[in-house]
Image (cartoon, rainbow, N blue to C red; front, side, top):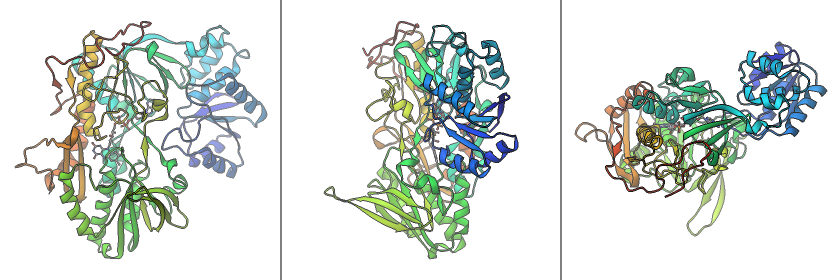
Length: 578
Ligand code: FAD
């Protein structure tokens, strides 16, 4: 959190946490204006938590949520009224601060010159030049303004998929101009969080500055994408600015839907409730594992799809292994509650996993979906479905609860013209090209391809899209294909991993010959790969476009399944399915 003073009576900031309010009060702020709607992202404290912290410091709070990309004149008026009616100075925040800065800028139109407003915003680090027509009273609406440049390739999301794809493209052609739209200043190596929760990695090892992983030559637009206008070849940012592209890669990952479980958000990080699915929370898993000497430990898995389908049970095995080593396991009643009906989706790996379940004495419960958590009284409620469609609810006590949250497509994807019925970016599973808009591709967790949602899948998808998108820019149909590869290193104990690697249809797709590494069995080589090789493979190879063992398969004469060479010039509209 960095507070930027724009004018004497107003400062803006990216997302605040309750513990930041003290610093805001110390800087003299008297009012907090919250412009970010609750539930916009998975790691966001809701407005009630901020309000509580602010009131404890004697600050006034106004909750004026503005949906990204959909700012209205009424929002601007409400912001101006809040500033007039509240003690100054006020500190306004949203995800990055851009929406708040935009609201302030528009609320000043007619009072200050456009140059003064834009200059003040720029001094605070916000480039609001797209607002100039509106600020100057032009009839052109904010929503119609934007940067005049059309990028060859716009990438939405600077996670594993966005960065790897940009690097793979640049490796093939340095001259394309690429913009990556990404609001975060940190990039996370999420596969490392399992090892943070298992006490093997430090949380800091899984985080890098976003600026460090951005490929050289890429234009980083530090903003969040709010919507898509594929018929105009444009994406819309949260402040309403439109960015034009010739081709688009959609890679914003997925949404962790914490709010689908009643009471969970309030108790996450306390009362023995944890999750390796958050950077901030994974160390708490290890804290709980170390302190638990007896009682009940529950591990949950929601309905598919989720990212890294093995992660919920990996957390359990590493916890059990630590308890076995400390002697506590015999006093801990461990159970796994899976909304699905099998331990792992690819049956070849189940025998090895079952042996560990037996070794640790884990109670397996299938078709049990966590629906509510009462942290203070340490009770978890599960919806249990039985054959014949009968459903009942079971309440269980716990001393430790590791939750894998339900997962969905991000809202701005699900509500867009790019989504399929389930909300994911609707792509051809082999070429990863959008089924309707031929100049749109998607990589990573956000797409509809039925692979295991993993960084390992991204490693193979990114080169495929790099090849196909460059072909699209040349007016040629895609010809690189992805086989559905995904991988899940199941950390069954400290020092051993069952290295699951498979492609579409659950077909085993091992990287190494079985005489060297047998993926269906626990091996120390698998552990060595997970703990030592994979972080290097991720940061130093995949994110840099070095496609070790990930060269895309090229079909000599691929029949054109969906889109032929799309119309990519601005104003011509998207390619239609052939
Ligand atoms: P992400 O890496 O999540 O990146 C998405 C990016 O998009 C983020 O930077 C985000 O800020 C940005 N974004 C979001 N909204 C917007 C917006 N509106 N506008 C612009 N940008 C936006 N994979 C493995 O291969 N092996 C493992 O062992 C493994 N273990 C895992 C364990 C855990 C606990 C977790 C949580 C994940 C694990 N994964 C594993 C899965 C892997 O991390 C993901 O599949 C991978 O990160 C997906 O990449 P992505 O780029 O699609 O999404």
